[in-house]
Image 1 (cartoon, rainbow, N blue to C red):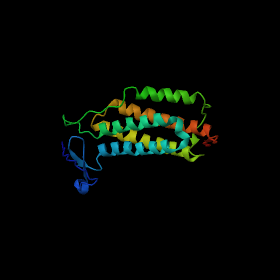
Image 2: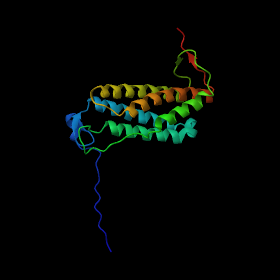
Image 3: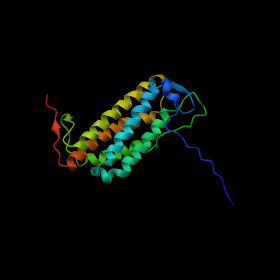
Image 4: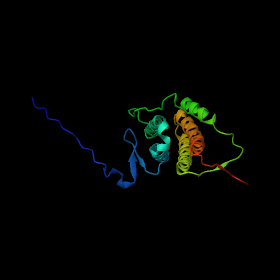
Length: 189
């Protein structure tokens, strides 16, 4: 028996965005500078930074958690890219346990770190620096989502997740500095 399969190959370019617009989940077109696009675009950038952290062998033991975080961020981006006015849009929400999982990881790392008495200057090792960059991108994504929330309600769990993730990335930078015996330089005023 012969089976004929029709496989549709999707091209990466559609030319539909050449006019400066993009589609939300559900089909609505908005300008590429729309605050919603800014919000999920910042989350998308953060996903890539977490991928860069994951690629460093210094994070081998955190691989599963970093992949989990990327997956949760993809869900956040999908939720933000959905047209809230379209009832046919799919609904996405991160794992309800994502915040407590981050808090547990933060607590575990902090138990081996010395308390901070001042701000620290990012740097000391390239992996530590990447953590700080990811943290800054996470804070930007959080600001973009909060700005969007002022005009169109966003799921509260996304705001909380981004806030806690930035905290996690800061503590991770400190933990990696400790593991690599990299000096933390305190900010001197």
